[in-house]
Amino acid sequence: MNQPAATFAGRILVAAASYNDAIVDILLSGVRQGIGLDERELASRVDVLRVPGSLEVPQALSLYAGNHSAMVGLGCVLRGETVHFDLVCRVCAEQLAALAAVTRIPVINGVLTCESEAQARSRAGERGVEFGRSASIMARLREDAPDR
Image (cartoon, rainbow, N blue to C red; front, side, top):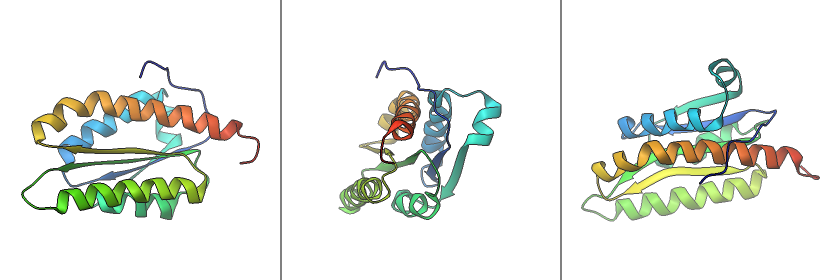
């Protein structure tokens, strides 16, 4: 995505899973960079919640959605030997999409679903920046919407 971050007036909410935290920390750092605010503005306009895992991300965003202009859900789900991977990926994506529809607040699905930790690491930095840019763009779009 080559579109630059957008200027927005409101706040952005980020829920970040603690499971696979090394990957999620890279994503979160990228989100902060991609939003396009200086450190002082980030501290005052970006709220970060830490939750146990990716399945808790949509729940946390729902609880704290409030007056935010956009929300970002961050997590990392790695394929294992059971169908749990498929379940977590599907449920998380469905709940994030439903949250956006119900709250009318843009939700960026920043939950990586990868085959391995190596694949997740190679994607996390760039994808995190993209998630942050997307959040700023969608926050601005929501703020400009005629019937918010």
